[in-house]
Length: 259
Image (tube, rainbow, N blue to C red):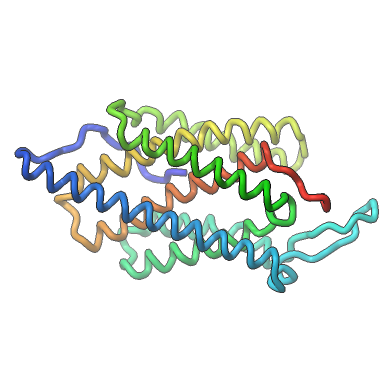
């Protein structure tokens, strides 16, 4: 999920082989930093989600309730509801305040965001089998890696995809809100299917955007600004991964016997 404006795919690369080599080395180091932030955030999210779902913390977020047919179901508490919507606030702060925040503040907000996201995703361990979650995570990892590599290495200009993908993202959000009232299985399936396409495309688009922005602004930014930008770029890739994972899980996940 990208929150940055369109970019131009023609980087301003300085003249000279030596200068280009330094820029390329810096780009690889920067991309490695972004992926390290993203993977560390995913690991923290997974740990928090598992801990909330499988330890005593679960009672604070989900309470057992007897359903209409005598079936015991887990309903979210007020704390769980807050944790589900809190990530949006973190995203907005990081997206619009990244230039004003200090380096430490941006990094701390990122860790807090990943932790809260883990709490909000804990319910997947109550809905789906752990084997299904693990296999979907592996499939998501493969798809994400393939599209990110393609976005990084392709010579095709992907900047034009941004508007189309954003329109698809808005459509997904609106359809998901509508389905809160309709409870339509067909609409949910369509949203998940379209979501896989949109977030797969956003993975490639965001990767190329990160690469091009680095090539364009590497000489204009200081080390502190580049460090903050790496956190913001990691957040975009992190959101693409999480959303792709959730869409695939809704399409192919095996529900547990309690649901």
